[in-house]
Structures are given as C-alpha cells and as structure tokens.
Image (cartoon, rainbow, N blue to C red):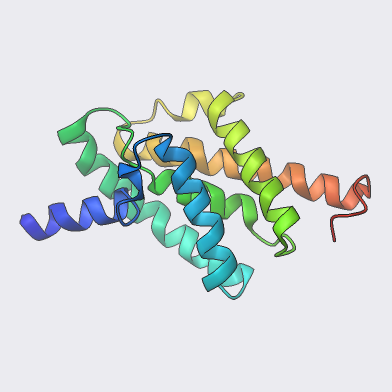
Length: 155
C-alpha cells in the first residue's frame, strides 16, 4: 500500500510541484510548458504522454482526494495534462507556448461551459476532464489565431 500511495502522490503532485506554496496550479502549468519545451521532441510524443497521464492522473487524483478532499490544491497532474493538450501540434516557439500557457490558465480558471460541468464528474475523472477540455479550448483558440494571420509575429 505504501508504494501505491507514494506513486499516487508523485504522479498527482507532478514530482512535488503541487506543493508550491503560492498558486500550485500555475506552477504545474509552468512546469508542463518548460518540460515540453526542453525535453519532449514532438507533438506525437506529447499526445501519447498526455493520453497515458490522463488515465494515470485520474487514478492518482482519486486516491489523493480520499485523503485530502475534493480536487485538493496539491493535485496538479490535471494542469500538466491540460497544458500539454493546449500545446499539442502548435509551433514550438516561446511566443506560442506563452500564449498556450495564458489561454489554458484563463480557461482553467474561468471554466466556461461545459468545463464547469465536467469538474462534477466523480473522483479523479472530474479533476482531469475539466482541465483536458480547458486545454482543448486553449489549443483551438491558438490554432484559430495562428491560421487567421492576425498575429504575424506568431510563426
């Protein structure tokens, strides 16, 4: 049981970044962007990792919620996965990743419909699903901005 708990907390807190004293969700998102930028080679790898960690995150969040309560602040695996979804198949440049970070955080914080409904799903499914949809919203928003040609400084 001790190994299961340790693994749940390592995954759920994203290697401890969920213990950041101020705005742990923002810290988790920033960790996600930087990890992607420096260590992940392609959008396809990011997609596979996001998919795998979505399910691992749902399991770990469910475990942590039993001890710490509904959507405890230290659970940031949802921010990591949502942020990675926001970055999927976008140009891997700092301006684009900064926009992905900003839009993801806005959608995650304000939770427009139906993001607000997804967080009511049971256990870790609610924790993970609302952020995954916030990531999709952010990604689509940035794709539309890029393809509209409004911001010519975005490659």
